[in-house]
Each structure stands twice: as structure tokens, then as C-alpha cells.
Length: 225
Ligand code: FPP
Image (tube, rainbow, N blue to C red):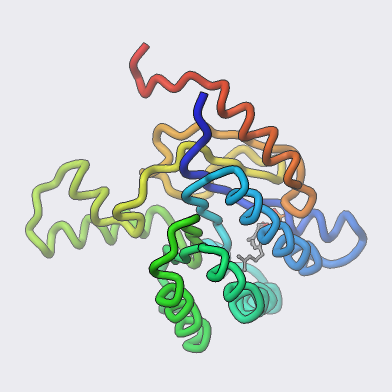
């Protein structure tokens, strides 16, 4: 009957939402960002301690240049306009993913936002950016080999971007698509998964609360009976 400590979200459906509303895919992303803020606030209200958001995957570079640029601009505006307030409200930021492909300016804003929020304790907001689970696992194996560590579950877990962070209890994917899309494959191995039909820009605090309430009713056995 307990609330999840760690919620992970695949925020899918922005593009389709934008097109369905006879506008552009990018309008979907812009509206999606507003939902990001709402869901962060709602997570704090619901006493969630870790929130991981899949904001840009290693596969998303295949998209048209203009859409990628739009997403990068949104990320920049989020860092410029919103992060300060979140930090004031006790949110700590952590990025998972390979940031080297991002423009230098974004890299340094991300680093400084992480540093500024380092002491915060209310919510750890984990943004997955240029993140891919298969790359993360390959890099972990490389690290283990370099450091001549023993190969076991603990050394793999400690060599992932998510070192020190408990696994998600709950994964929510919006957008009426039932797949994991290379997201946290190791970490989600015992998570409860909720696929939601609504597109991300339509997903609201009530929908979120609904999933959280359903989660609370699940008896989690982790292979036991
Ligand atoms: C998936 O929808 C969404 C993304 C690839 C980007 C998610 C980005 C945001 C919600 C806004 C930016 C967020 C931050 C934190 C700066 P899709 O485009 O794959 O939708 P589709 O399946 O309908 O095409």
C-alpha cells in the first residue's frame, strides 16, 4: 500500500498530439514541456523522491534537424527559465546520458544546474538526455573491464549512470505505445509498468494521481509469492 519512491516516465506522443491539433509536431513538444513542470510539482506533492524523465534518446538524433533544434531550444529555455525556481523548491537535478553530443553551452548549463542543486533533498529529478540503455550497459561493461572489477550484479549496477539511485518502482509510458524504447532496461527489470493511452501533452495531474493510486494497490512480490 505504499507510494512509489521512484517514478520513471516515457513522455511519448508529443508529435502526434501536435499534428492531431492541426498544428506542428513542435507545438506538441512545447506543450509537453509545460506538462513536465506540472508533473514535477505533482511528484513533490505526492512525496515521490526520484523522478526520471526520458527527454531525448540516443535514437532521437535520427529526427529531422529542425525538430532536433527545437527540442534543444526547449531544453535551453527550461534550463534558463525554470530550473532556478525548481532548485529553490528543493529539487536536485541529475542528468543521465552522454552529453558530449550536445552544444557546449547546453553542456555547461546542465553542469552548473546540477552543481547548484547538489545539496537539495526534496526530489531528485533525473533527466535522460542522449540516453540509451544499451550504450549505458556497454559502457558499464567497459568500465568493469578497465578497473578489473569482478563481474556481478553489484558491479554492473554501480557502473551505470544511475549508480546510487534505487530502481524505478513504477514506469509510466504515455502515447498509447507499449514498448520500452531502450530506456533503463537493467533498472526496470522489476518495475510496475503502466501504459497510458493519452498523449503526453494531455496527461494531467489527475491521470498521474490515478496511476499512483493504482500502483498503491499492487502487491509486489519480486519473484516471491
Ligand atoms: C516523445 O514524443 C517525446 C520526445 C522525444 C521529447 C520529449 C520532450 C519533451 C516532453 C519536452 C522537452 C523536455 C524537457 C525536459 C526539456 P514523440 O515526439 O516521439 O511523439 P510521437 O510518438 O507522437 O511522434
